[in-house]
Length: 235
Image (tube, rainbow, N blue to C red; front, side, top):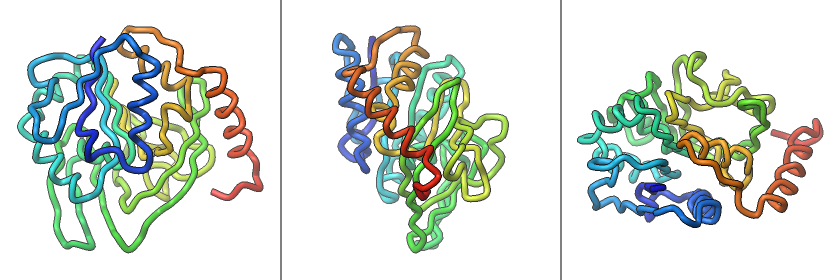
């Protein structure tokens, strides 16, 4: 099994690097390919079983888009082949059609694999929690962002939010899913916070694995679900 980690040296903000460590602990026999921003992606000539990319700064986001732009057709091919790709934090935005950076008065076209746009405003940071439903399980996580996606994700959303916000403050549908390409603003990081989802994500590759430290991880997960379900807890 081959897992490609994209640009970990610059795409691991808000603890998202722990998603990588958790995958490594869960899949000790897998080959992990750590692609640097200066490297040709492994996926360009090969087909990984899983791909992961985490949160980044807005400056790096623009560099990542330009780095991946020549591989847009290949990424589309991988998505259509149902290769599981997880993008957390603002990493999912690189797959959108267009990003406007209001504060810097600049804009850039994304890779265009998802029919959504993005608005980024450095003067309006959003911090929040999320309790949501996905495939019969509850998902918990945190958000810290300057940007919101805009558009209609009603046909390809990732999470149905119970508490917190979705795509933006007017929505209860969070993130997007196109085939097995999943983009979510959840940070935290999402995989060790949600061991059942970690197992689900891995299963999309056709492999089965028990989440690392599952007993302890499930204890922490159940406690956080109880906490986030408490109406006294502010979101």
